[in-house]
Image (cartoon, rainbow, N blue to C red; front, side):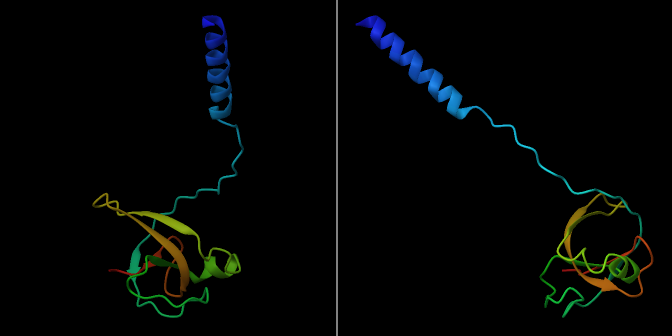
Length: 111
């Protein structure tokens, strides 16, 4: 009787371990590019990506040249921004283009 209980306990444990084993999957990550530039302020509204945004939305505007170069494919992408003078970080979603921004600059909604 003890050997049957031991056998089934061991079998049950092995089944649980097999079920809970991690499954190896492959995930394709986006290419990460670092830029340095100046942050400018802008008033949100209807952006080039076709969405209405308010000052409460965490959005950014990329340089118009970059927007045009990629045919607007940057819309909806999240950007990680670090203020190098303070170390503060910010995440913003690309929703507009910035005609006055140079390469590397961003338009940021301050809230």
